[in-house]
Image: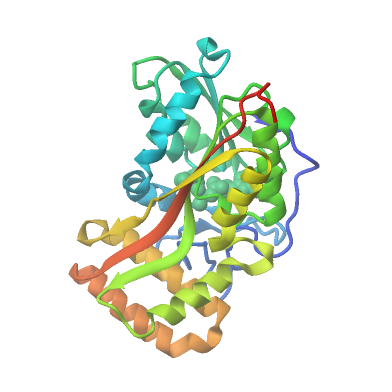
Length: 330
Ligand SMILES: C[S@@+](CC[C@H](N)C(=O)[O-])C[C@H]1O[C@@H](n2cnc3c(N)ncnc32)[C@H](O)[C@@H]1O
């Protein structure tokens, strides 16, 4: 494994980089997924290895749990404009080079690589070597037309990517990443992507809207507290897509967005349960005064989930940024 080109040394971010609360009485919280392990429950984040400065890490079990819902949610509508741009890339004959930022266990590549034609080399970036290992062993092998897909992994901080790190890239992707970045980090990402002149497909950013059926009077209060939790320490949470659209457009890119909601029903009960625990847990961490009311709410929601009577839509947004082709007039 190599280390990615960055703007500095491995960074230490103040606060809670991934929207994850410090381990404590309520357990760690992962943005969008939530507190994790009550006694006897399976964690969705792995605890820090004793270093409070180290960002909390995502559990591969959580990423695996959401992969099916993510695949169903991803906006197919952005694929044709992307394919057209990729087909017209100069130097395409050597195959595509795709950088997947914050790849986790590699779910983006498993979804996208078989939907694009031609040989592809995926460069999988994450700061977590444990997840990179999972991504490497379960990487996609074949493109839509049967061409070969290869991968390599790079450990590093994707929020500090420079255009140099993306030199030669055909495409930059990310999935469930933008909302855990700050404005400065998204601007750095837009600088790097447009500087390299390659398209960016940035998917599954939380939109800050959730619908539960049947409704409950506490839904809106929990959603508001959760969104506030996501915006802690300068992270963008539900504002990420707006900021990213502005950042890419200011740098001359054409930007398209499309909804990519999770639609969770009885068949997704395991994911819904973990998501509910996380959603409510983050809300309570943000507004401890929700306390007993939130606990009763969570218990009722979990019971409905187990009974197969709960439906949840978690809104996300996918974004495709197409920079001006290299050499085009400004
Ligand atoms: C919510 S997970 C999404 C993983 C994967 N893209 C997916 O869709 O399943 C976010 C991932 O981004 C990584 N990550 C978050 N911030 C990062 C940063 N600043 N530098 C590198 N990786 C980062 C985390 O380690 C984690 O693997």
